[in-house]
Image 1 (spheres, rainbow, N blue to C red):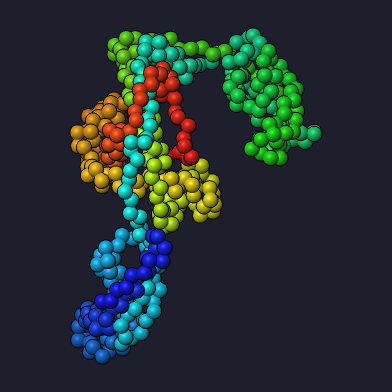
Image 2 (cartoon, rainbow, N blue to C red; image 1 turned 90 degrees about the horizontal axis):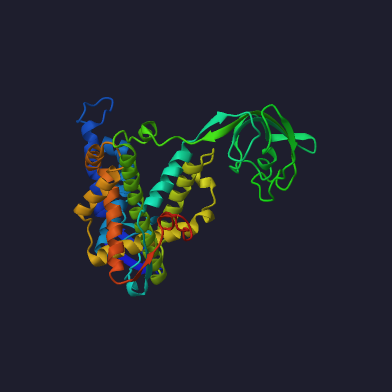
Length: 437
């Protein structure tokens, strides 16, 4: 087999591969012999069909099949021999594809870039330092109570925080518009669910009252036909209900699966969950800074095939997340290109750090991470067992641990400073750089 390599760009390679005619004919004959053993031809017993008849009937299809397989196998042999690492499927262009002649074709493809990750010493990381205080637990209990607020009917005028049951009909310049009317809608005043001015105009209303209000749609409203226009809504208030926070009692604790230990036991469970959230938030913020530092310190030439594959993955994710009757391919590639480049760059850099540092997933850390995730469930032992029986899920955890080990490797040389912050500041999500990972 003859192979020549041409570099057409930094990452693109052009292989010209020649396969001897003898090898082709040998593969064709092998397939025809296999066909002869099972072919059913009228006038002949199975397995007794003359080879001349077999060739006449099946040689063309056998040759096409043999050529397809030989292109695949010879391409693999060539990249192994030339020590090339393709980053995507090759584009194959036949040059000589005739019976009795050597097969010759050109395969064009991109290779993975050669990377030597560096610059760890120039990466700066600000690591949040925080603890869960009793006041933080008190605040969390208040949040949990508000999330489980119930509403009871009252006879007074509506106040902010009350829930109204309303019917409304909206018009613009005397004409009703799509989505501008509803019946029996529950609306909490001050929730910001409706356009500016709508909820404020209902403060002070009583059950049975009808009000005509004239709020204006924002200039940047998603429906451009309504943006910036003033509407007239006729609103009928059917009922007014005041919020009632639940008591911190056994019934409330049971909503969260805490049936023992009373208030102190519930506080301890809440604190444990908050501490787990705090650890994860700090770990995430440190990781994000490390990844940004690696990207800033290392410029990577990106194979177009890898970026295109990542763009397609992001398209599929967008369709799954937002729904709609569209195909991923209908979403413009430009929407995802920068995010795709960032992901591919990080993936290549992380893989190189793993290679340079000879990292492997630490089994003890894998176990520790699985146990921490399982601790949020009522039967943690069953969750741990499930992970270890599910190879795909276990593989994902190992990947997470391996990334954590990459972060640790960088932190050993990076400039790290600890910054004391409150619990709330520590768990507050950081603004995603570029696009969310």
